[in-house]
Length: 77
Length: 178
Image (cartoon, rainbow over all chains, first blue to last red; front, side):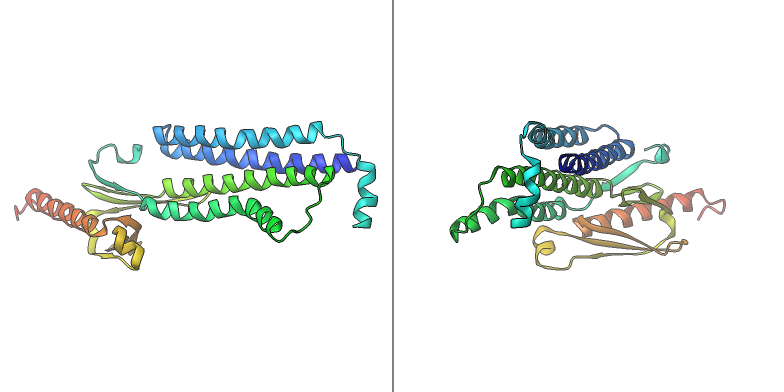
């Protein structure tokens, strides 16, 4: 249950980020065309953010956190 | 741009790049905040929990935090890059991207210009020679402002020279021959 909630929230935030990024890039291309500057920005943005996104997603997939123990730990702390 | 097929573009300006870089500095500070916070906690010997769960949540929150900071940087560039002011031989065009889905394009005939002034205010604008150009017109929109453009006095000169040339052309084209 906790795992589902965490994955859902993380997934929604990543999806919103992706949507806004795509929209911003799309509008930049629409209004300015695919100039060299726009290409550089797209490539740089992809190079910087995709590894961050992938590392975050892989952290959620690979974790073997005992979610059942989360509630008692949160209550204690 | 298809709006200006028959016009000859004399000048195309954006805001001075320094205005964008100054915003980037703020974002760079925000990017380094988590590391600075970690460093600060280490300096004061605060016991950072080394729990697997804590590290896991740090990674998740860190991912979201960094992704959104870079998104804000992208949006700042988008806002900077899509604000353009164009002087053609017949028109002054003010294109401003006010929000993600709000773009305003104002096109005013150069012959309707009544007054052009340059304004450089502040230490950094004075050192790097950027400022505002205010163009008073006789149109429905009374004033067009070029915000934080490089060499505003140069822009004023170009606008006035273009206006003069347009007035000469119109005078020569007049049926009275004035």
